[in-house]
Amino acid sequence: MRTRRLGSTDLDVSVIGLGTNNFGGRIDLEASRQVIDAAIENGINFIDTADIYAETRSETILGEVLGSRRDQIVLATKFGKSVRGSTEKRRASRDYIARAVEASLTRLKTDRIDLYQQHEPDPDTPIEETLAALEDLVTSGKIRYYGASNFTAKQLRQAQAAAREAGYRGFVSSQDEYSLVKRSIEQELLPVVREEKMALIPFFPLASGLLTGKYRRGERPAGSRFDAWSTMGDRYLTPRNMVLVEKFDAFASAWGHSVLELAFAWLLAQDAVPSVIAGATTPEQVAANAAASQWQLTAADVAAFEALGA
Image (cartoon, rainbow, N blue to C red; front, side):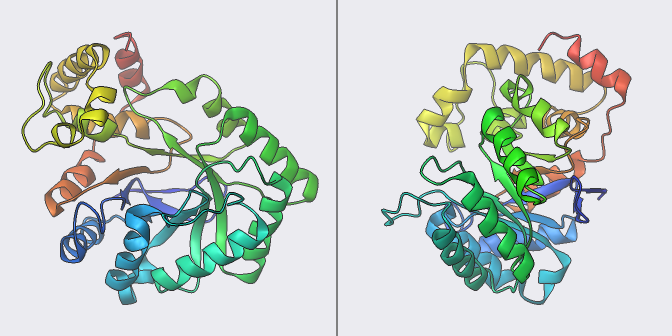
């Protein structure tokens, strides 16, 4: 598994990362253990979670399973979205962050978090307060770096400007939805990420399964995610997307690859992307995701793909 430097940090991350939003929800402790073991065996060293995943169970499972292997992992988690049962609104305030990081450290059974990400903007807390709190965590050694997620281009630009004004390093990464069928961040957000020399960490790279190749026009296989969650299926199984998937399939097949492999290869051909976060519920899915990283698109390949007009 190749590794890349995460933006301007000293963190070297595997080009395929493991997303853990399934842990403690769709899969239990033992199934999660098998996925984590498979990830490490396949060279994945970047694991991403959040305090809200499965009502904190994802972090707890990671803490339980990683054990002595913690130091092999670049561990990322998030704060700032509402944890079930909480009524707090200022979830990027100094007080909230101080409590949230301690809770995550306890669940993860670690003394530091490598990348601590603000899961969404907090309109009720000045960004200056949030940045100061995060900088204090860096100084204390509880986190190494901090990143953003789901910010608009304007919000991210304002945050980085505030960080510079205060003499802080600021956000080193931005985690956002980005895939072959979801490219809206290219209009405004991605240019800011590049200007700020940040890392872009895509989530939902397979569009929640649409780009695995198992969906065809008008079909929702029994037992699939889109069959189980019709709302998600309605979001991704659109006529436009199905036409695109057929184009992608033809393009990938001409190179002897699958749509899934194209989905990862195309994202990894973007200069701001060091790693792509992919969830998994089985060791086999982990192995397939890891194998997809072997296809490296050249500039000519990317140009040929873009000529499809997708």
